[in-house]
Length: 124
Image (cartoon, rainbow, N blue to C red):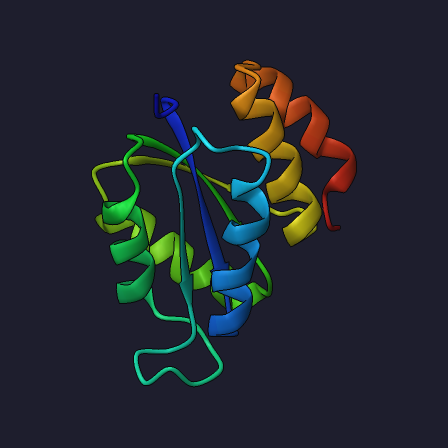
């Protein structure tokens, strides 16, 4: 059964965006995980359109978004403004933060508790 909260990964590198969900799916089979990587031309960078597509493909209505670099956050924020889904963006270490969230969501931990566990991973 798919969980109520899903995860979206955003990376400048398409291969990174595809690889992290493979890792997360090993520990969180019931969490909907989608990703967006690269520009519209599949170059290094990010695309608000690709991020919107990742939001739409995700089965959950509430999403936790993790990203690699600052400009990815800017495109995430643009996509959030255009989306009907509730999206929380986390300024944490990408792999560690997404992995922590995925394992906790799989175990039905509350969002409040997930955020408490993400706090030490915050990038300042």
